[in-house]
Length: 229
Image 1: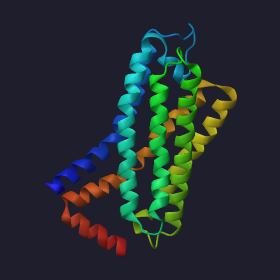
Image 2: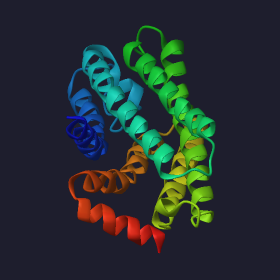
Image 3: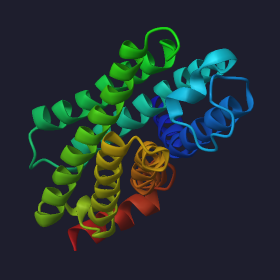
Image 4: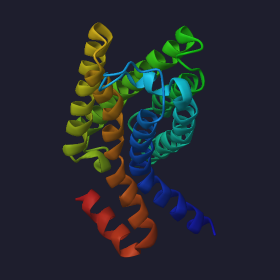
């Protein structure tokens, strides 16, 4: 029974990075089709503006559905990092992921408090969301690069693609966030908001590896031998 529960857990982790993208995109599309307070002729409004007027309920519902998906992804990533290496202290890994959990609080504030009602509080939620996710991505990327450099002691982190992917996504997030804060242009905001979902996609291969280890003993032996070599 325990193995079945663990298998279900890892299979859920496999699909959540994709369902979170779908939830985010559908939320924005639906809100753009509902009457809101966006000025006529404005083709690409700020994300927060999509949640105004009658669209606020859909905006709030979409992000409330999104929050647990992201938190479960982060819990799965935390679990993987704790199990896959021993050279970085657990307290550091926990600290990095607490930042990710804090971002969920800011997302909740941004979702519940409409830009129409309390603009300042909504802005705190939006800025806190971007800030905490950016900090998480920076620290997590540094951690993964460190593990890659010391891959002889952390063989599950020997693939160069992952640190490069995380680094590229982090640079995109930071660059677009800075441009958005300076210019308030909507395109950088959408890129900065969407890139973390691409960042989380890199978690999928390692979730898949754990799933295969649960379902295929031969794969586990082969994978262990490959790590030793």
